[in-house]
Length: 237
Image (cartoon, rainbow, N blue to C red):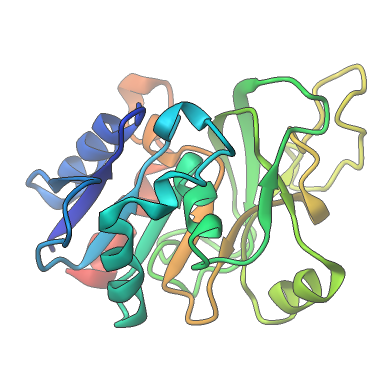
C-alpha cells in the first residue's frame, strides 16, 4: 500500500501520521508539499492536523485552496480514500469533499484531552478492524471542532450510515451534558448530535476531529488508534 501525507505551512501532526502509517504499512508514506500541483500514484491520502496557514481567515479555508488540494479532490472523485484529521477535517469541509462546517468550540476554549468515541459504522476502509459500537479512547486538540450542519444534512448522514464516530461517555452512552458544565462532558466541543467523524456518500472520505495517530502505540499511552491504520492496510493493501 502506498500512502501520501499532505504537508501545509503550520501542519504539526504530519510527522505523527507518518510514523503511525509507517508502523502499519512497513514503510514510510510519501510526504507531499501543499504547493505541489499533483500527487504521486497512491492508495491513500491523509490530510493531517495542525494549524495550516496559522488558522488565519478561518480554519482550513486557505489550505483548501492550496495547489495540491485540486488533485486531492480529483483523486477522491476517482475513488482514492482520503482521511482528514482535525485541521484535515476542516480542510475537507472547506473544499467540499465533506458536508457541514467546523465552528468555534461551544465553550469558546481550546480543548486538549482524551475523549471516548463510539464506532458507528465498521463497513468502511477506515473502521473495518473495529467492532460495531466499540468504544475507543482517542485524544482531541482543537479550538474549532464544533461540527454543524442543517437538520436535513444531519438526518441524511445518520440515515445513510455516514456518521463514523460519535462522542460518548466511557460506558458508550451519550451523556447529554452541556459543554460548559462542571465535569468535562463526553462531547468536548458542542458538535451536533455528538458527531466526531463523518463520511462522504461513497464512504471513502473520512473527516474526524480526534487524533488516532496520537494513540497508535502503547509507548504513547494507548493504542486504540492503531486499528484504523492497520485496517486501512488490510482494506487497501
